[in-house]
Structures are given as structure tokens and as C-alpha cells.
View 1 (cartoon, rainbow, N blue to C red):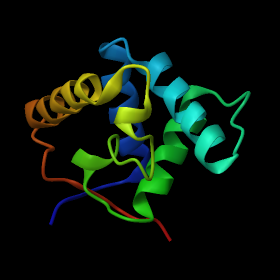
View 2: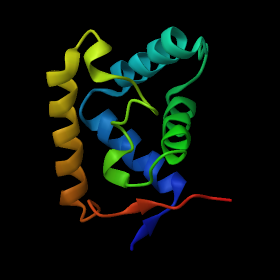
View 3: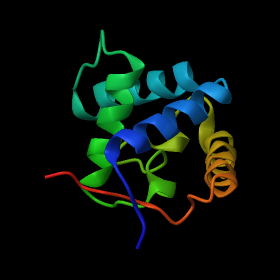
View 4: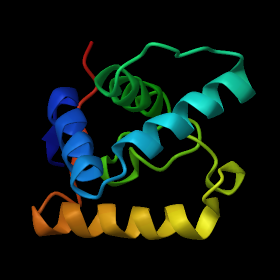
Length: 113
């Protein structure tokens, strides 16, 4: 099993979202989800802190790099966003393609202790 550290996972997710022009929207949806579903206010958090938290929350349940941006436990429920499920599903497909292009589709994120 191949492993990638949390910092590299964050950097990949950040790079992907930035290249796709989705960084601001993705982070806004994470903030909305946390406030609405968990009464957790992320106001004032920058993109780095938000994405690091997404990965941290994701690692509580799973550790596949491919899934780190998509699981509702760590990010948001796609269907509950303004963009809807189909939109985010296409983003997820692009994320998978992004990882394949870097030969990282089977990587796992190392849980740091």
C-alpha cells in the first residue's frame, strides 16, 4: 500500500481546486455545511485551514486520497449545495482524473500520530 502524508494531500487538493477555479466555492460550501449541520462557525478561516480540516475530518473515517475531497463527513453533502449532486459528481470525476494523471489514484493518506 502506497502512502502520502497529510501535507502532500492538502497541497494536491489545493492545487486541483485552484486549477479548476473551484477553491472559493468548495471552501464556501464546506463552511456552509459545518455551520448548518454542526453549528460550527469557520468564519475567518482561510482556504488552507479549511482544506486541512477537511482532510483531518476525512481521516477519522477513511484514508484513500481519491475520496478525501468528496465524503460528506469531511466536506459536505453534494445534493444539499446550491450546485447540486451532478455538479459535484463531475468535479469528483475531474479529481479522480487529476490523481490518475499523477499516478496517485491508489494512494492512501498516512494518519499522523
